[in-house]
Structure formats: C-alpha cells, structure tokens
Amino acid sequence: MSLTSILSAEAIENAVKEFQAPDSFSFKKFSQLCGLTSKSPKEVKDVFQILDDDNSGFIEESELKFFLQRFVPGARTLTDAECKGFLSAADDDNDGKIGVEGEWLSEPTGKAVFSGRNFDEQETKTL
Ligand SMILES: [Ca+2]
Ligand SMILES: [Ca+2]
Image (cartoon, rainbow, N blue to C red; front, side):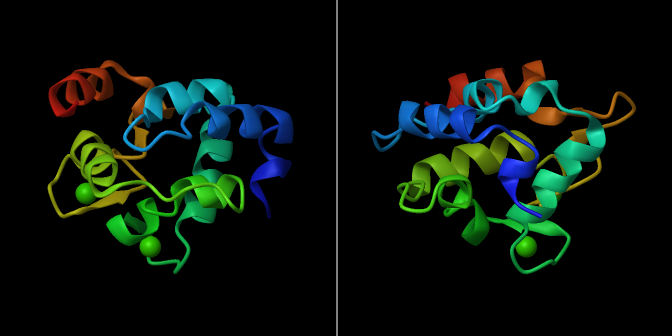
C-alpha cells in the first residue's frame, strides 16, 4: 500500500511544498492540505501504518523525522523542534511515541486527533 492510493499525489505534493522551510511544519495544516482530515478512520489508520516504518505499532520520533519523505521522497526531514512539537501535541500518555487509538485517532469519533483543537493549542505553545 502506498500513500498515493489513499491521498491524491497532487494534494500531497502541494502540502509538502507548503512546508519546505525548516521549522514551518504544521501537522494540522498539512493534513488539511493533503486531504487527510476528510478521510475515513480506516484510511487515516492506513496512513499511520505506512508511517510506522518498523511496524512497532507506534510512530516514534525517529519515524516522525522522515514524515515528509514518506509522502514525497526527496522532501526535507523534520527538524528536532518540529518532531518534538508534533510529539508533544499527539502524545497524550507521554510515552514518547504516537499510538493509533487515542493518539493518532481520537475515540469515539474516529477522527484524526490532529484535526482537533488540542493540536492547535499545543502548536501555539510550541512555536
Ligand atoms: Ca514505529
Ligand atoms: Ca503515546
């Protein structure tokens, strides 16, 4: 499975382009631009599985670093500050990684957590 079977290649490219500058990354905006926020819980989960490169069931900081490259090979890596901001916004139980249920997907709505308000608040704090 590839990301382009879930999201349009054009939308992905536009989204990645938007955050070319280091430290400009916003997960919420990114997920809106690439169309992730309008996907079904299953599709959002599929994206998680693609990003979970080592199939550990979690997205670790080392995988977050290459987040953009999973979408477009040749894109930049996320900076440490961006990885930490991303993590602190999603990592509710503070284990240093992002799990599927409750962190990547919020229950019971099945919506991507990052489409919610929490992420905004966290981001404002981090940046
Ligand atoms: Ca992993
Ligand atoms: Ca966690």
